[in-house]
Structure formats: structure tokens, C-alpha cells
Length: 166
Image 1: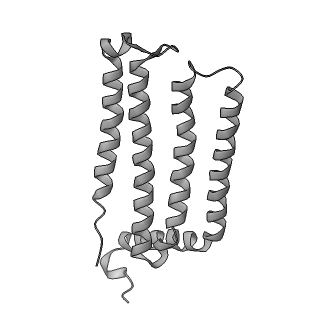
Image 2: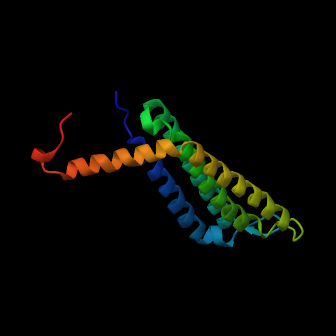
Image 3: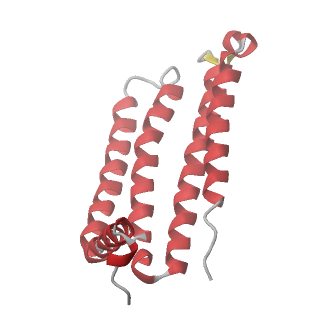
């Protein structure tokens, strides 16, 4: 039984809508002028932080569900599940640094910024090492999957009378 992949579109639509809605709301005058707390953080910055954090969480959930579906499908593509999850994790962790830093900079003491920087450096390096390890351990499956895709495209490009029949 083939599983449907249409759910990916739903995730992508919600991610795009969250980002656009966050930008639109943050640009409205009430959000621009309102300040929160003693650090005087703008309400617009808070709205953007929430929308971008939500979009990153949904992106990671998309990658997690995609990896699970690849495992369920099995075969050569099942070995790519760990690669997909590691890649999405690297993208989300690297993006989370920019999202978080943009929001907390007005509230962050100067001596704490290097700590935040190093925490994200370690997290990004950890995610990158995980991706490299997965690529190394599953390289044969990756090569096989790419080879199968190339062979199927080559087979489709041939005229019907020249195709090899199994």
C-alpha cells in the first residue's frame, strides 16, 4: 500500500502562513509602538519571535514525520530517514540561533551573549556531526537511492521500444 505524501503540503502552507502572519502583525502600528517589560521589548518583536519559533517547530515536526514515513515505506528509502531527520535538525538549530538572538538581544546582558553563542555553537556542531555520521553510516543506501532515481529517469527518457522489460 502506497502512503500519501500530500500532508507535506499542509505543513508547508501552515509554516508559510505563520511566517507571513507574524510579519504582518508585527508591522501593525499597535504592535510597533507597544513595549513589554523593563527591557522595552517591542510587542512586534514578540509576535515575530512566536511565529518564527512556531514555524521552526513545525519544520522539525515535518522532518520527523517524513522520516517516520520513510521508515514505514522501507526499502532503500527507509535508510534515508535518519539523514532527513539529521538534516532538518541542523537547519532548525542553526535558524533558531538567529530567531532567538534577534528577540533576546535587548534583554541580554553583555556578559551572557558569549554563553548563548557558545551554546548554539555546540548545538550546531552536534547537529552537523550527527548529519555527517548518518551520511557516513548510510552512504551505501544513499548511493543506491540516487542510483535508482537516475536509472528510473534514464528509463523514462528512452523510447518505449528501447526500454528493457523485466
